Length: 309
Image 1 (tube, one colour):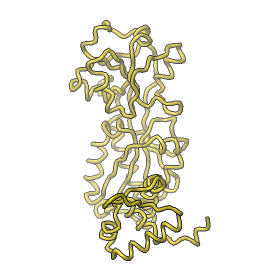
Image 2 (cartoon, helix red, strand yellow):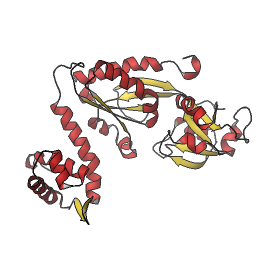
Image 3 (spheres, one colour):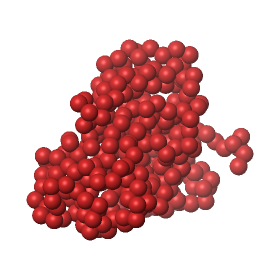
Image 4 (cartoon, helix red, strand yellow):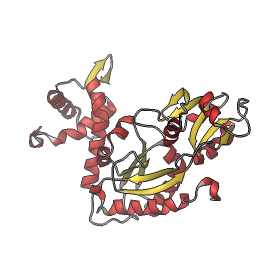
């Protein structure tokens, strides 16, 4: 498609219409008249060959195409905002920039507070948006790095040489504290015998600890799969299940869910989460400042949980 033939003024109306699902609310949001938004909607319908907003009774619902466009439209608006708000210099004391970081819930649960406090202390008018990664965004990395300031992910997910190590951790096994199927220590036989709760258990998304077990001939009997590490402890509590969790997170939720934290009986590689970004931001002063903040925060997590830190 020839971009020169597109009316770029339709991007903001499209974004507002998909978010609000209402011509009147979208018009109010953009400080435009309702007839003006109706005209934009008509142009968008012709452009996409789709109704986009489908009336059901007194309300509108998104068409299947509109649903697929919503996230991409939001990302396009964010990209344009960052493009046209770029400055030759960056003053954190006065900037109102919106920094958008994608990642897994684990990274935000462990490091989010420290990152947000560090950003707010130096840039009180800036906004920090933490957004949980979807499977689709993760599988599209590193291309999806163009649409955000960066991602916090373990090594091995993003094929980029631009990264900053943020935190280290180790894998542990969690079990309900009243699980009578376990002895004092976890054994290799326990790994194969007892049921499991696993997060990120897909062909293209898996934890190194699971792969290490499989390499040693131990195939975990997966009873429950969850998309979130944050929900895993509750799915272990009150059952005979084992769960695979990062030690920092396990320590944070241990008492809440009545869990035991057990060492792996087989060696597994450590976790190294890093902040990954696209090269288009290398010379961006605001992005350079953000990376310096993350580098300072990383010193907080330089010591592994069981090493006296």
